[in-house]
Length: 255
Image (cartoon, rainbow, N blue to C red; front, side):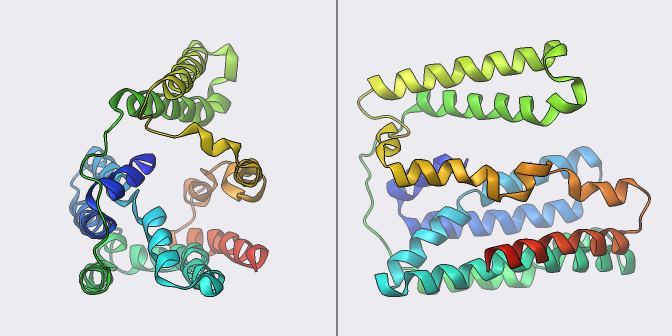
């Protein structure tokens, strides 16, 4: 859904997309708190991901368009404070709420803020020029989604299944490679590709992408580390205290 955010914003406008995304994320959070089974919780969490995919890229675009170029760095730094503060505050508040009340309050506690956010977006975000005739590359979207999906399964499950000793991992790696190859060929030969691969001619853009795995702690150590304290028998609050320093380290590194 993340690559789809750009198309939706250009097709329908940034204002309706970010408002709808925020509202849908809020609704999905309520459903998570009301979930009656693990299966329902997983489903509603998936809906959260679908709804919230557009929030980060579109909010950055809106910030850069709202401030003059000389203030762009300050605006992005202010935006980044929330990104850095979340990993510190979230585990602590989540652990406290889970112990004191219920895990459901982890999803309920932010609802007033989210409702306020929707109201402020409706009042402050200007309408933008739309491209109603912009075409959607269905095949390119499906191929890219499949390549990312199979690639994610390959990376997530490879370590626990013995990598290429596992038939499942072999199949996921093969399908990811095939879908990626088909996506590249399709994007280079179609008139209106879902993703313009000419972006990769920009050397600064490519270097930035290559540096991401080296600076992101979750990509270096595995994004399941956050679940380890809880899995080892710690209370929710203890797990939060153990996880929060990761956010502090991220904040210091970025500063």
